[in-house]
Image (tube, rainbow, N blue to C red):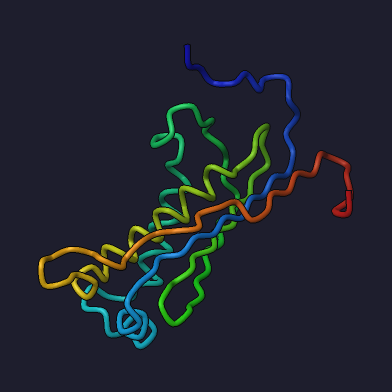
Length: 152
């Protein structure tokens, strides 16, 4: 039977998680994003807002996640010739970590990029032969119990 893990007896700790992922796109689509030539608007700005919203709503999407007091979200993007990479860092002081929130934020950011550029990615049949989201992973997580120094 499924159920939430009981974290009642755990102390609050500073917690941070960073996740990243990539969306593979046509080189021309990446150029359009970087040059601000996407018809739907500023891709980074909209994808950042989507990531932040998704982080805050993770318990609504993943049924066994605890609702957490999110204290900070940072979203960053970098580019390669055929991809956009999103990195999301989430912070809290709570009884459990924020890895799922960071992963959810990255995924929402990448899905938003896809949604905003899909018209440039489709082939003559309306398919997406090369577009893909890949490499979504937790890069780092940090936990500091009260009174611990950052080097602990």
